[in-house]
Length: 317
Image (cartoon, rainbow, N blue to C red; front, side, top):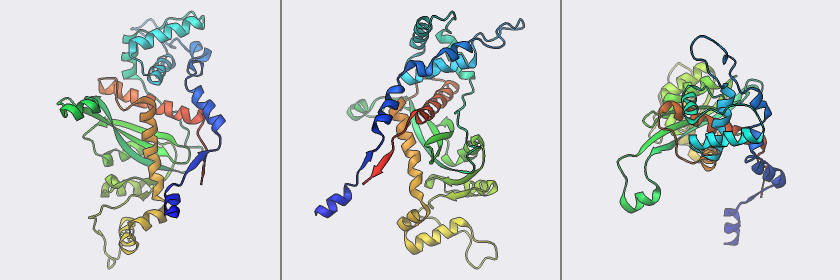
């Protein structure tokens, strides 16, 4: 009994706790996200243009305020107040965009995840999706009185680099969009060559395999339990990788197949989803799809910056 209990209680400990603790503290340092470099690029380059009504504030100024909004989970009006306070403390002679300008510019912004994947060579990606609530009650109300009518969700599709834990691509769609339909949009965002694609059973579709084969990407996707072999051994064509997986699963079992191909790496996508919701919550504050897409992109960018600040190093025992 003791041996079984010890085997089930496999633990790990953080080996760089002091450094990781400092990185957690630094996440809340306002000067890390809002400094003199942001103020130096505050005005838009076309602010003095005479034709039409040009933008007054640069994209970096708007994005910096929107990142503070997501970091501290603020409404637009409180974000404007925080911006005024920071500008006053820094003794800068610049105007702060009001909450209306922030909301309108957020819908037009093009948020980059700031991830350089082309220089590191071919990379693996693990893909998963999660739901973000727009309308709906909390768990307490649902348990006490049942599910309400206004329950609306968006679906966030993520592609994560398992080597660095960075989100390399993201797409926010309506809740009815299937995961397999977003494989191409995700891969198009990745700079450089993708070597291996890890996904769960939702991506077990022929169009996904064909799209990955055209890109020269190896697919590690578990076939469904009722999957059938598409091309039998008496065919003159080359065997399909999915059929070979099915044959190995039938011969050795699904657990052995997952261990042999390293399917456990796909769980890092679920880890990224957990970290995203733990840091920024599981609901969206905006109500229009364009602003929600910018909100989701900002959260992914902030999570990537958290990775650059510091990550824990584990020692398994």
